Length: 188
Image (cartoon, rainbow, N blue to C red; front, top):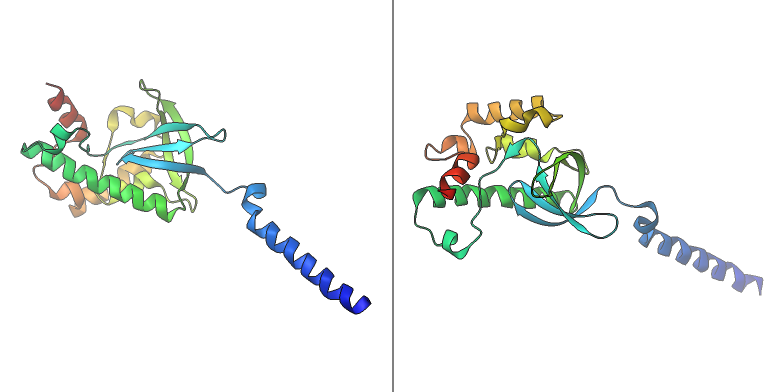
């Protein structure tokens, strides 16, 4: 009987350990907030601890716009097409970064905007600062009107300066219109 009890105890313990490891993240929790979707190059939708979605606008930066309507998607205007091409590149880069981060981000919420979005510095679980990457790769610009609410303003300004100096991304495009100027022009 004792010969049979040893293997049973062994497999019972092994099974308990295995099941515990599989469900470990439910008890320990994984770091960061789960990202539900990347809306564009500077906006994501995140799920809170209660399972409700909320929108997060990236602090410190403004990324090129993406087309939202069929009319915009079919526009032949050079300024639209140029803005949307860069906007899609920024959105795709954010999607790539979020996926590399295991679809989770850590937020440092700095404010809320008039649309009810949270304004936040966004980092991946490994500490990568998403806004800094976008700026270094020339896929966003520092948004100076709110720079005083940006805890990492020195980092973002340095990242933008490097991209501008190296003429990468939007800095290589002489026809690029700043996103805030583009939005202002498109409202008219």
